[in-house]
Length: 373
Image (cartoon, rainbow, N blue to C red; front, side):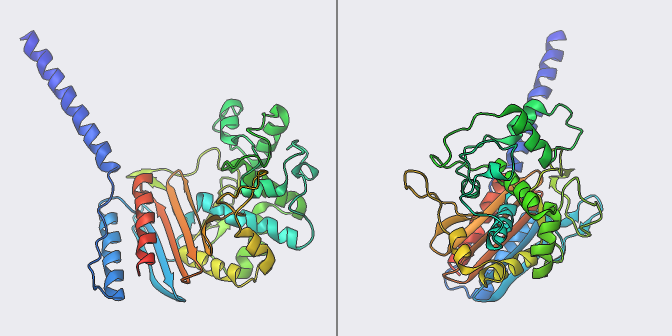
């Protein structure tokens, strides 16, 4: 009897493990492919894409909004799922998603607007304005291009920020770098390494030079003038009622939203909608925000000390001539904005609640769709 009992217990444990593994695999399984038959009309292709996205939502592989524009026309602008899963509040065209790293093009724009006003120059040392970033070799250009060599602030915070129940702010980041002076990863300009730290420092630079908070600066200089009514910098320090239609991030059926590091901004922290993002790209490329010369520089690959080019400009990944994009991912959210000036096409993808595997797959599928449209 004792043997049989142990056998049954062992069998149950193994069965539970198999079930758990199966659920994990199911959660991270790649979505079904979008199949577009040869000869399908443009309207038929859009209908198939819409059905595909609906199916992904129904299988918990997508919860978000998609906008695709081509030749000046919006061919798809639709939301799938919930803004607040607990309340079953549906998404709408006014639903504001956390852009995560898709915030970086806005931070870069804020810096370039100050350059346009003559308040900054790109090759100045950052320490001129922010003494706590005491690395005289690092210039503003290095930060914009991700060529600075600054170590990751999240790792520094995990080591030295003891109470994770206290919100970590941009000023705390500057204090940590001032106190600990971590060694640079490489000589500025020698290598290219994507740096969230650099863009938080750029947001702090905007605050120092403009005399406004990063949140107020972006509101007054970008979002309000462009008519981006559902867009703002938003984090744990913001007025919780500021964004009426803020989307809550989820992980399946669980809330997965802001955490203690969400007191910083610049590397992320902007919320927006698909329609507001389209407005912004049109205003940007119409040279209503910065000059043609600065815009061209923003869209140009950075250069290392060796003369070698990277694939990153000022806030934009440079895929090809006239093809620029950025994506983002943070707790509960994924995002993508890709524009191809050659075909006058824009893809905007905002997601709250999918796993990173399915989000990346959907992003790739949307890009392939517009290329073949």
